[in-house]
Image (tube, rainbow, N blue to C red):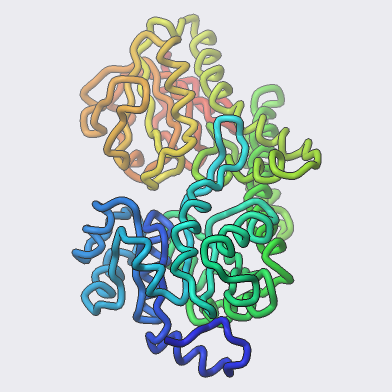
Length: 453
């Protein structure tokens, strides 16, 4: 079996070995980002084992089925690569690690209850991978980690468990730069891959591999810590930008001015990119990555903490807006029937991690008369407050208010005129409420319609 981490072997020989299937690859983690990555690897190198702790996920992949929804092209690619026997799946980490020469880790890295970075899942994985490492193997970390983690946290784990030392195997940070709903496109062609190794040979190995996967090429940076910081910077940029939009969204009330119109106009200058305000920030990235700096390094990050505070306040802002609209018509929320649309953190994505709908629903469960909730892309709503109702049934019910938290495409077909006059708080400016009979308040735009109430 050929090794990619071998600077004495000509590059073209290593490329041919990789693309010819002579370099077995193990991708650890077959979730929303991991399965698309494993399928793309399999499509390019024809020799991939996907590893996951969930036997249901493994069984589905082995059957050529796609357990990840909402990813264009992924079901077909999984089916094709499994049928061609270029992709297989297993729960046996030890066996996969012993067979592979390239090891790709793409497992969750979150924060604990005190917002301290939690690398335990990744560290435990590498403790299992280490004994299977051979000299010349390469480990690619795609999971987001705090700066310095590869050098100070992960390399020692691999050395201790493999019996190898730095220089006998490669380790590079190669951050995933993908969004749910467009994973394959992002992996293969949306923008270049960033890679940085713990030594030049690791960086070179990562560059060689990812240039075969990504049509836009690779950006090799100086070292793994630089690559780690690139990924964190991308995340905190978005968090700060959204916080700016959320803070300025309040201009809609006192001026009044439609801040969403302001942002659209401002964004016509190429170097301006103001994001949209909304009911809150969720997902497995943006709410967590600022703490990979704030609670990891012995440095003050007042701007990042302020941005987190602003974005964490938006669920309360949303409920407060509902109260204000009821007060404006001389009514109280405590005897109102309220429907919340969407618990997923993002439109058309079946993911609820850190979703702003959760605190919104928890507060409304205490302050509204009756509370109902629907989400067409989430199968199980048991973790959320409120009585579950199917989207197909909402137009047969009568409500006093609707709060749109997440904009799914399915909500565009709601026949708003079928309801008696409502108070509507629209937490996603991308969603249009096509009715003038309702009192509609949109975050960032203010009161858009006084309706018939």
